[in-house]
Length: 178
Image 1 (tube, rainbow, N blue to C red):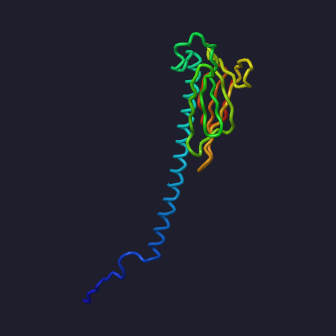
Image 2 (tube, rainbow, N blue to C red):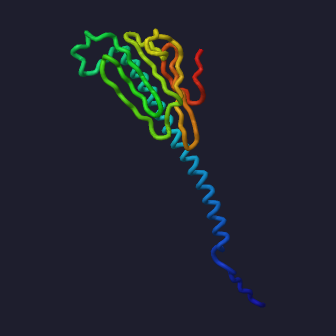
Image 3 (cartoon, rainbow, N blue to C red):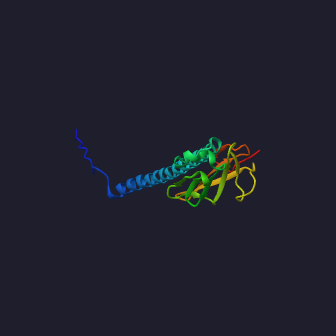
């Protein structure tokens, strides 16, 4: 009975097989990288928007509590009621309190900015606000501030101030006020 010897004709992969495997892995990795990069950008946008909401709430609290810069604490009682202004434009925003002293300036991360500029003013002692031209009476007109991520994939979130002065974050669409 003849004995058959089974020999393996080749061991390992050919160059073409290696190239196909490498191409498949590369395509999968590129999709993963793009998705991950987009998530990093969205996280930066969400974090920035949460910080803007916190600063707006702090500005309103300044008006409610009559916050005065520490350098003016001794003459606090002789000051006129303060107007606390939240200003925003480009990729920066600030809080100022006029005669009550102190300006705090904040910077958004790269590729995150405001769609347009403006300001919201809070008045003592009840925290009423106005977003109209300076010198106008306080209004309860709702305010919508759009914060945008320009790259890698454009996204927007909205900071909303309703007629009661409540500041909230709406991540998916424009602010809806009832």
